[in-house]
Length: 396
Image 1 (cartoon, one colour):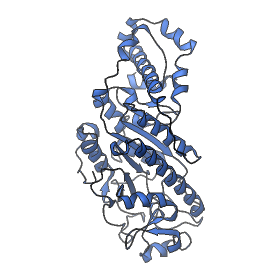
Image 2: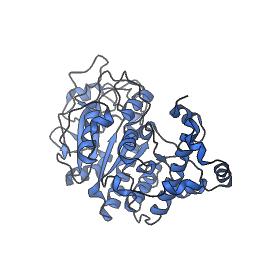
Image 3: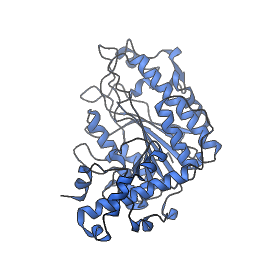
Image 4: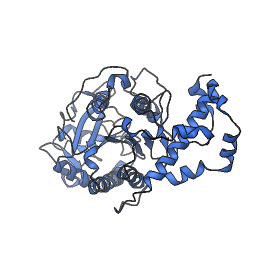
């Protein structure tokens, strides 16, 4: 059995536990190996409808295909002569006006997969559509350049594929105090006290113990460090905002972690899309607004890049349920203070030249965005992480 499979089959997988006598070797934090820059990746899970997020309000084809769900002038905030933001994205438009937002249109990949699970895997692993990888692109970044589980944190109770590496996993936690407390229970201490250094030399068991040790050490480090800062910002009362508040507390407490992952669900709008998406976009934008304020108040915004993606966009044509079905290319948001190309990075979606399924064609491979972030923001070799060379963009 491979070590990774062994670990996956164990119930002690991601955020674990035990404390043997030799743990001190793992408790020495080498912050010099970590990047000063921070990357926060946000997934709008479910396939957000990009055409009703950034609206091509002068395009008749948009209105012809969406007679009941297209957005009219009063439903949007105009940004250019032909594109406008959904009216509930006012805080995002303010970031746009300040030069803190880049919108990349038509992002996707060849032979798009319209399954939520498979397409999410593709985005999280940076694979081709016919390639199946068992590690995420941020997990491989931890493997190669960070070497510590706390280098990458998902604000959730379980770890997504994106932060799973070949030899190292990130940490998943919504509450560092609870995570740390769970690792101090009598049961886990008893298990650790019954093993010896010899166990570390055994192939599978040694790997499992070492993972546990590193996870325990990371939990203590995250808890002890993050409790030095508590946010004073008044975040909206929703789960996504709470995740961003925790992320801000990690960043503003000078935690050495360099990559964070947050997901916000509910965007699978097959029916009754208008009201549902409006609420979700309001939740997203108002939470992002407070998150950026939190970072700015602590002078950490300049060192933080925020990437927002969805696993696919929606079809151009509305369906019978006044919603939209799974599509392909979509827009991606990049938020930061160091953007080279703020505003709209590229051309608007071409609503005439669609693929065989009637969906938007991609013109920007999402892995080019990853390659640019790895190379120009995290300052590492992107080919090592992505297993292939991709064109670099000039947004940062």
